[in-house]
Length: 469
Image (cartoon, rainbow, N blue to C red):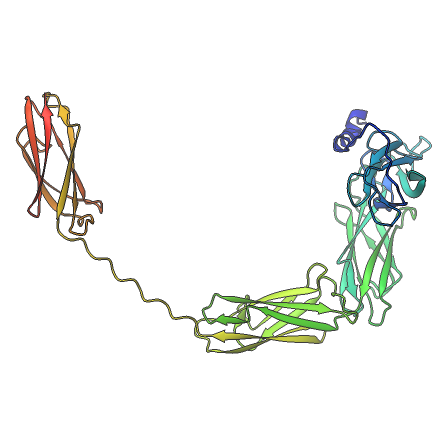
């Protein structure tokens, strides 16, 4: 069995992030207090790891969230808070008036000590601020270590669907044991008070098959079903006390599709696009749920799939689906009429396709370099010893009449009155090898004196002097 230090590792990590305040009492006026469970609504397992999130909302006398500086006293009949105790006091630190605390339950909570089967107990959590007190109940599931089902967690994707007899919401149930590990082979019964599952009934039995302990059921709501939430209940067939609930919003099917284009004019250049936005709403003017399919088609140009038709789905809570239109090179000027259709309802928008702007003429070719018009001659160093070994590097930079470097391969001749070049002579001819217009030679000398170096190219001469001493 894990030590108490290991079991409380998560507790201390979260405790480090909880702000503590000391000092004077609050004199903030509080109008009311609301207490809700935002995680763990279906209970928590008594394993020192699973936890519930309790949210307290403090309002002033004008029913506006606030109460900044007020303190909320939380107490529980089972389990412990982030300070390791059954009571904790936390301040209101934000303008929304919300204070959040967390509840854990240690192993053995509410059990007889034998732990041979699942036990269910209830923790009553209270929140008090000034004279206002509210209560919530949280189910505590006690069990021994093992792979028996202890908890079911539900998710719905999407969490809103239209009553159209076609669109489905995937209800995913995850069954875990006392240690939070998935349980394979658990039979679950899904029940709904609206719509039907894939078997055409309002209930269906599914078995977890993945090692993660998950299984999916799909809910569809018939046309004409009264709008509002559908309540889905999932219960373990082995232990009916292991239960979870989730609600799915039921909306109306699409009643209006509004299309816009930005920009409304594009050139036929094969790359500029117009963004076509479809906003789909129901009969009440409310955006349809995410995942609603919209089919776009156009009379000219293509969408991003290189076709005149494309399908997109609405995302988020805006009821918006998007497509992108372009006109290939060669498309004649015309009006493209784009239609967006969803569940038999459609809308249109027009995009103007124009001839692309003519391409600018190519730039004139660069003027080729001219013959040598100037030479800059530099020696480094300008003094060397007469040891026939030390060198002076002589660099000639040749430019034409436009002060641009001469062409690659321009020839020049170096000569000296003292010393010798790498060829052992007092004269050497070389050429430029790149676009810099430069060439380099080396001079050595065996006796003292003054060496006058001359560089000649295209009749242009440059001189420099090297002292040998």
